[in-house]
Length: 295
Image 1 (cartoon, rainbow, N blue to C red):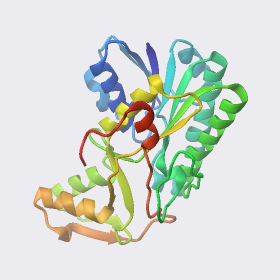
Image 2: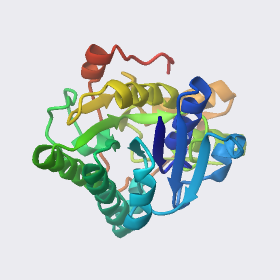
Image 3: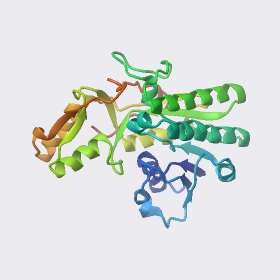
Image 4: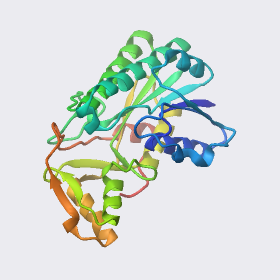
């Protein structure tokens, strides 16, 4: 089976590619990545000479390129996205181009070529929850321009599934952590700054709550859905580890033997969602998936 992975030089995409090639001989991978913010060629340096791996530098908005590549593949997993919330607040336009136009380009092509697509979305499409937990049926209520573009892509996909019977699955995941994560993210940033004895900035009062899942567990979920997920359905993937930011940072400092004096609370960002929460009961019941790595 030949799989097109878009955005495969990023954190989650690169882990997914490595997992596919390590755990099975059944897959060939074509990786299309525009090498924009968040991409890192070093993430996949160990497989650059692998005969079952091909890298193509290109943008998912390039219809001619995507038509040609998709025609040679059996299915598409779309990780490609602008994904940094703070940057979407500073300038939303690149997010509209990549996350809406790019996703639409792939969606339209796989529909015409009758291929399967897995769209990697986010728990942020549900917005902040003061109580309860989001299921696949919960309403979309995005707060940031980033989340709004991911929600827009989901709505486009839903419309294509209803109108054209497109073969698409949407996955939403909570906060990932693990190898190859971009250093701007909370956990690697905390480790790097603590090592350098530098101040660790935390937004607001540090009470914002996120659910955390290891990237390998996330990739396992995607692999299960890739092969056995139901077309036209969405699936939430979560780790059941809801923790506030201050607790995470202080735990890391404790493990590293560093002083909590390194913590520095800074002005909160605009529209900062207080709490994300998702239930992964659906994927657990249908595909017997569950996280294996303890947070």
